[in-house]
Length: 396
Ligand code: CTP
Ligand code: MG
Image (cartoon, rainbow, N blue to C red; front, side):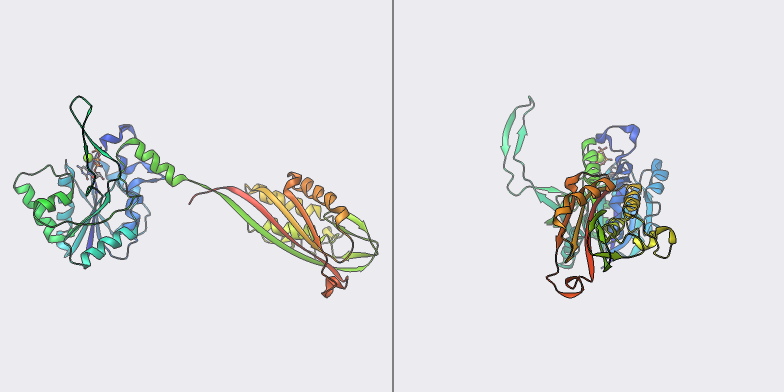
């Protein structure tokens, strides 16, 4: 099976209005021209053969700009279309005549939401031996026929009615012959290719279309397509951090910037505040900014005995400089001694002050290690931290 693709893009898009914005197939949706969205799934489809885009002679520059840099864009050929869609399709068929194709898919440039599953359904129908395949959706609205005075003349049963989509797909020689015969006999008013096949007596097989595969026809269709592609998600990122420091004889420990008198101290280059170190790493992790050691090397004498709030404030600055909004900071302390609970609120307040966020976005929890291991033996204190940061909006 060798399947060629025709994208018809020579229309003027009169029903879309706003002629100053140019033909609809070159207008931007989701930041890219409609036709670029349309071509991309075809170019990436495993059964895609030669592609011909049928353009209007006035649109050469628009087309070239629209496909610039698109993967596989070098394999797209162009030809000029005619005054009607039917003529444009025939021009595309002629352009593919020498390719030895078994089949061809004829698709509207104005349908940018095609997907591989639909293309596969059509290819499967080819394999089953169908020479004409029409993707279509069962009509869901109740249908009315209006009389000339604008009142309803009748309700039309929708049973068995389908709305035709594209790509309408055919055995190549059969559809080319049907198109040529239609022109020879003076039939110029077919609005799709399936109706030419029907007229030529080729049975047209229906396959399930796709509800997304709408044709952008009126201005609102284009706005809605743009809105759909621009639906953004908040770029929420979570980072974690872990730190541990050794307890040695001393007069107290500093955790989350709160000094607690105790007969031990935490050993380290700075003030050894494991809690703020873990949280600093968690913040840096939300933007891939390395870890605390990258920013404050323990070998650097300027950080000797430094208050760890400096490290956390610096990480918060990095996050903010990258557009991040800190929404949550959480620390779990694992310490057999000293007792943390009486100091928790002061610790949370320190976090809130350093990070510049509300108190209810800051949390400190503590647990002992049930006398097990180095923490249980009061040889050290560990901290685990989690930070959540929103970095603007993320486009799907
Ligand atoms: N088309 C074409 N050549 C024409 C007319 C239409 O290649 N002479 C293409 C359009 O570019 C579009 C597809 O056929 O991709 C479906 O046609 P339609 O939605 O009717 O587009 P337009 O003809 O451009 O729009 P309108 O009818 O509102 O002017
Ligand atoms: Mg038209």
